[in-house]
Image 1 (tube, helix red, strand yellow):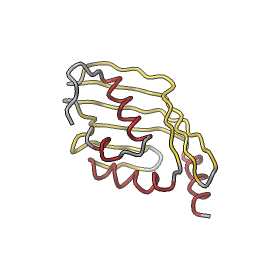
Image 2 (tube, rainbow, N blue to C red):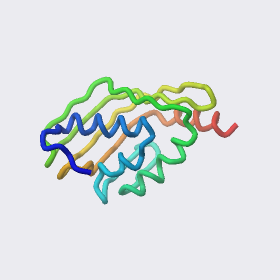
Image 3 (cartoon, rainbow, N blue to C red):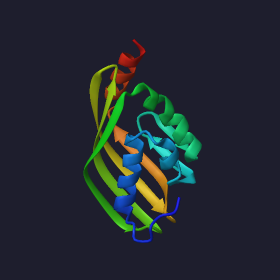
Amino acid sequence: MTTNALESPDSFVRSFTALLAAKNIDAASAMISSDCEYDNVPIGKAFGPQGLRDTLTGFFAMCESLDWEIIRQSATGDMSSAVVLNERIDRFVIKGTTYELPVAGVYEIRDSRITLWRDYFDQAVLLQAFTAASS
């Protein structure tokens, strides 16, 4: 994937988030570095594009729909070196029930790729959804 030279870290992370909400893991994976650290803080870490795919594929398969709303976002730097912080509401529907997961996200960008994606959230909300999915 080539990034537009005028793309900002803010718009890059917004595009990444939109791809994930559309369940387009392959396109989102192309936006991360080969050694990217993907850290769901209450759950654990995965690394690189395959780690991202392995972590999200099963979850996305459970979800009838996804909507990741960025409430606020702040970015510093440029596409060669940047940090982006956001606050989101990740909404997902499993077996007809909508769940809302408040999330704080941290992204580091180096050389037009995400090298770190760390999300902080309440694991209990996610476990409630997983329990509903397995029943």
